[in-house]
Amino acid sequence: MVKKIFLLFILSFFLCLSSPVLAVEDYQNMTLDELQVLKDQLVKDSSTLSSQIKLISIQIAQTQQKIKQTTISIATLKNNIVNLTGKIGNLDISLNDLSAAYLEQISLNYKLQKKIPIFNLIISGNLNDYLERYKYVSLIQKNSQDALVNLETTRIALDQEKQDKAQKQKELEKLEIQLAKQQKDLNSQNNIKNQLLQTTQKQLNEVLSQLSALRNFSSAYGSSCLDSVPGAGSDGNFYSQRDPRWCNQTIGYSSDSIGAVGCYISSIAMTFKKLGSDISPSAYAAIPSNFQYNSAYARVPSPPSGYVYKQVSYSSAVIDEELKAGRYVIAQLSMRTVSGMHFVVIISGSDGNYKIHDPWFGADKNFNERYSSSSVLSLRLITK
Image 1 (cartoon, one colour):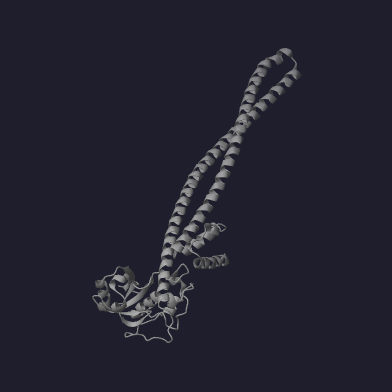
Image 2: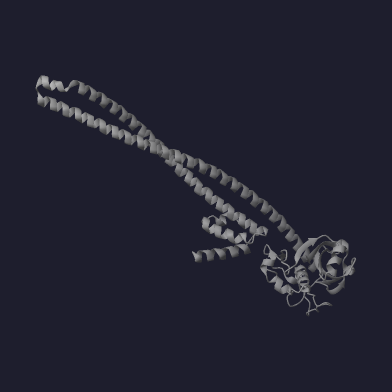
């Protein structure tokens, strides 16, 4: 059992690395217990659409298994009820036959007793004839008693079979109600999964669009990797996506390199370092769970203890408040000269006049020399 659960755990791990759209058929050969193990594992981390889709796929498979079992139980009960109905019909016939025979024997018994009263013996003096007739009457009476016992046994059996049939009818009604609910649950789960798939496709399109925009930016400015390691900037926190130590390193399980599309994770690394949690772009890119859909598209980061992540619209007041509190602000930019997108880190300044660490162009740059507030698509904050 332990070995089986371990294999299931390994299976679930590789499922998490695979495409987020998983067919229910992937789970249909598993038992309910095995499905429950996978479900329990996924419940612990169902924060992403891909894991939610995996979870609902397992729930659908569980419901289909239950429907299969319920359908088999209903078919078995219906067959039992048919057999009981036939048995009850036969018992009814037997009961009617026994009743008729018993009444006939009572009538015959009565007639025989009328025929051979005791005083006949006195008149006729024929003892042997009387004894023969008496034995015959006694036999008839014994048959009548046996018929009565059989009649009562058959009646009891008939009552029991009728009770069994009534009980099975109740069980059948409950199972049919249960089956209807399971079918309703299955329809609901399929609807949820379809909605999640639509949301996933929409999100995936956005991922592809943003990654394409990041690639366009790096392509527009030529070769990505620097010849030497750049300095750490005026505050010691600068990281360049073009740093030769990691420029050609691929991100997560994707084929995209840090040099090509790593401006965001470089910005995250700088922001974390400012808060005392130093992680290089290389180390961040080496953790596949930081990214979605086996791509270089980063998930919402997990901030250092005591901080939260927020995405907000551009506001110089928000930027100024964060800078005064000793925190950087990440700006998502739409490029003016190329069809691309870029991320930079605002490190100081106020009221629209800011110094930035630019993962591509270098440390301590003037924001307004290359960008403008109108080009800011959003602000990403690691804040209190």
